[in-house]
Image (tube, rainbow, N blue to C red; front, side):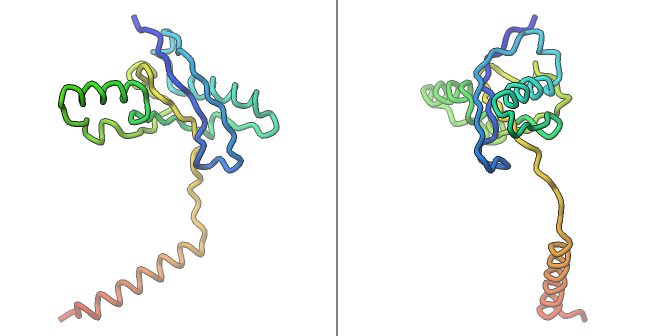
Length: 152
């Protein structure tokens, strides 16, 4: 049977949060949540966030969950233990932050002591002027390459 998972939830304080709204929740996820999707954590946090920021609520569908293994308590404890044993640090890929799919199960993806960041999904729109500039630069690079390496 799954065990409760103590975690820290916070809103992304740096990116996509211009007015620097903050809410940090230290909680223990119930054992029954292990078989639930990550979306459940997002919805729980957003409900609490919107209760404390009623003037500018956000939608759970506009958010994503990021687990930062480098910042979490369990990673710091393991790093200290490895250092005390004279072992090298874990590979960067094992420590790096990761965006969890909303449909991923909580149990295999969220560990005791993890710091979970809820952030707004970035908007991926490209302005037509940016496209024109990229095409202009691509053409310029192509012309410069032909000057250096003329076709025979």
